[in-house]
Image (cartoon, rainbow, N blue to C red; front, side):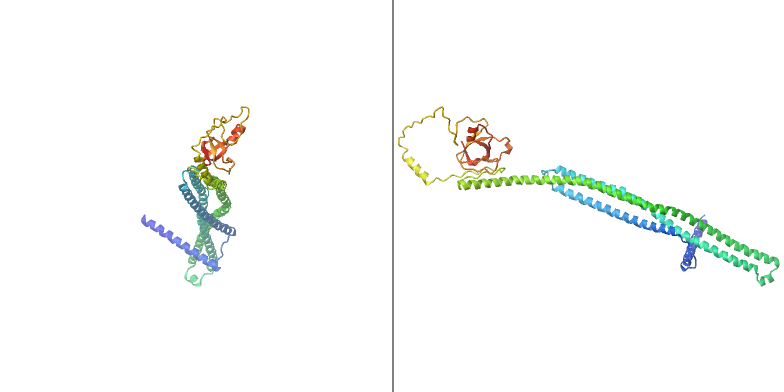
Amino acid sequence: MAEVGKGVNAGKLASNVQKRITRAQEKVMQKLGKADETKDTAFEEGVANFNKQLADGTKLQKDLKAYLVAVKTMHESSKRLHDCLAEMYDPEWFGKEEVDSIAEDTDLLWQDFHQKLVDSTLISMDTYLAQFPDIKARIAKRDRKLVDFDSARHHFASIQKGKKKDEAKIAKPLTLVEKAAPGWAQGIITAHQIAQTNLSRNQAEEELGRAQKVFEEINYELQEELPTLWDSRVGVYVNTFQNVSGLEEKFHRDMGKLNQNLSDIMTKLEEQRLAKKGVTTASTVKSEEAANHSLSESGSDAPKSPQKSREGPPVARPPRPASSQEVKQDNIINLFEDAVVPDINVSTQPENEAPAVTNGSSDAELPPSVLYKVKVMHDYGATDSDELDLKAGDIVLVLPFANPDEQDEGWLMGVKESYWIQNKNLLVKGVFPENFTQKL
C-alpha cells in the first residue's frame, strides 16, 4: 500500500509540474504574439472592481480599528481625569456625592460606547472582508484554467494541421516502402499511421473538452458573484456609518448631560466660595467704614463699630482724658464739700400737663419684648439700610433677634425710645454697634 501511495503522489506531482511547464510555455507564446489569448472584457472589469472593493474595505477596516483605539485612549484619559477630580474634591464641598456619581456614569458611558462600536461596525466589517480571500483564490484559479484552455485549444489545432499533412503523406507512399513491402503490408502500415493520428487527435479533443468545461464552470460562478459582491458594498458602507453616527450622537447627548451636571456643581461650588469670601469682606468693609465715620465725628477717642460675622469680642471704648476745665470744676466743688447745702423744694408737674418727649430716659411702660435699655455714648452714622442712625445721648430699647443665628458678634437689635414714646410700636428698628453704647 505504501508503494502504491508513493506512486500516486509521484504521478500527481509529475502531472502538476507538467501543467506548470505547459502554462509557462503558453504564456510565453502569447506574450510573443505567436499564440492568441482568450479575452473577456466584462470579466476583467469585474476583477478590477473586485480589487478596488477589496482595497477600500481593507482601508475602512484599518481606519475603524484606529478609531476604536482612539476611543479607548479617550476613555482611559477621561477616567484618569475624573479620578483626579474625585481625589481632590473635599468631602465638605458642595456636591461631593454627585461628583463621584458623575465619574462612575462617565466611565460606564465610555465602556458602552466602545463595546457597541465593536459589535455593530468592526465585527460586521470583518465578516464582510472574510469572503474576499476565497473569491480572490478562485479568480486566480480561473486565470490558470484559462491558460490551460488556451493551451489545449492550440494543441488541438496543431494536431488538426498535422493530420492533414499525414494524410497527404499517406496518399503518396515512399518508393522504397512500395518496393520493399508487398501490397498487403503497405495497407497495414497505412492503417497504423491513420490509427495513431486519430488517437492523438481524440486525446487532444478530450483534453480540450475537459479544460473548456472546468474553465466555463468557474468562469460562470465568478461572473455571477462579482457583480453581486460589487453592489453589496453600498449596504455595508451605509450600515457601518449609520451605526457610527447613531452611536456617536447618543453618546455625546448623554455625555453632554453629565458634563452639564458637573458644570452646575462647579458653579454652585464657586458661589459657595464667593459667599463665604463676601461675608468676610463685607464685615471688614463695614467695620472700617464705621470706624472712619466715628473717628471723623468724635475724634480719636471714639470706639470702632464691630465687624458683622467676625469672631471675637467688640473693641472696647478707650477712656476719655479729662480736660483742664473739668479739673478746675472738680477743685471748686471740693472747696465747698464741707459747706451747708440748703434744701431745695422741687415742684411737681401738674397732672393735666403732658410730659415732654426727649431723648433722655423715660419711665413710661415698656413693651414686654424689650430686654433692656442702653444710652448712646458716641455718634454713629448708619452705613446700611438695616442699621440705626444714632446721636450721643439717645436712649435705645434693646430687642431680641427674630432669628438668633442672624445676630453678629458685637451688634444689637433695637428701636429708639423717642420713636416708641411717639408711635407706641416697634416697627422702625435696626442694628447698631454695642460698644458705642452703655447699658442702663
